[in-house]
Image (cartoon, rainbow, N blue to C red; front, side, top):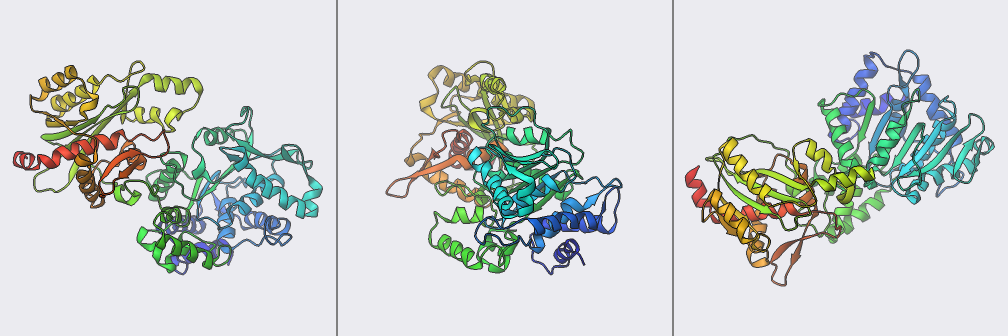
Length: 550
């Protein structure tokens, strides 16, 4: 039995411990293996790539000079990547996403794949790129490949180190480090792009550029391997969601192959029997003792725990200073009205930045709170992004995509007039019959004339000032957190809401009172959180009234 069949059938049979996502991909691959369609599994092609790596590649660090012996899980997934071909022996998969815990041999494996793709893929003049945001990061894999070259007489004979690449005279191909801050990224003709630590890439443009540069190749490969990270709403989150959709059958892409190693539940991080779910190299590549030390330290040091959960177990987390953990606000439940009454909150502290409004609604005999939301930014922000060619722009988030999805609106010019928030409240009232009883607002950031406009539309007593200090916000924030943890706050899994949650930290006084503040990253907006807190504070104060009405 070949490694492919041994490993993936072992997962489907329950003999190999694996997470639900790995069970799904194992089932898909075994079904394709047993019942081929357009693509079939060619054992000889799969074996050719494994044999090259184990024969010519040496370990780049530690036990220098020792042959690289791939583990069962590595052989199986490489055989899956290279072994499924059509009747012309053209490879099925042109993009691979591997998510696994740190210290499972990622960089060594990527270096071996680069050398294999350079010399052993039968492609003329292949261009192989190590891809990262910064050149120093991109050079990690490149340097590992060079160390392998230096330790192999045959590789050293046919690949020479030049100033900026590794060049093969056999086929005029090369391996090169590529970063998003390079002087020019035009003219790429990529045969293989390797991204080690996709989660560290803050700007997806480099990923998109490499992906789109593969169109001229017969059987290109984009090989992404990474742990989870702390950068949210970036390329990693987008690829993770896409991979999940493919595994769930919500998206169909027979050219995309995901391997996601993670815990199924955050509760499993204390259970040693579950650790291998996120660390397939545990006990062979990654030391049990090392991981036990990491977990023990995380148990004793709460500030270290998020790092272990993210980097060793691939669980999404916020920073230690954050108000909420990812599991606190993770809630994929969605809803659609109708609702009759609502309590609103708004944050318009800076007219040149993101502005947010929320409306909280409830249903009879239902403890949940349902959140309608809208965001605004000046159109000039998107215009500057388009001119610079930077899709993520100033705040490193996809504003244009959110606008296209109807999650965010733009206002002409360089400022957001707070009138747009009032217009949206009126829109809900006039088109969806949601009457807003009260609106919580920060009295420091609305003038008397605008206040009167709101009162004209919704009543003299509709506007409720919410002071932005610990005396006013501490208790509502604690209660809101409890409701989020209990999954009573249903916000339609809104990505801008989630981004604002991630960015919200807390300042605590000597009495344990808290108030929201921005995190260390100045680009992290918390306007959505502030609007929600203001609305929630008013809702708690007016709960009896709204309950009597619904």
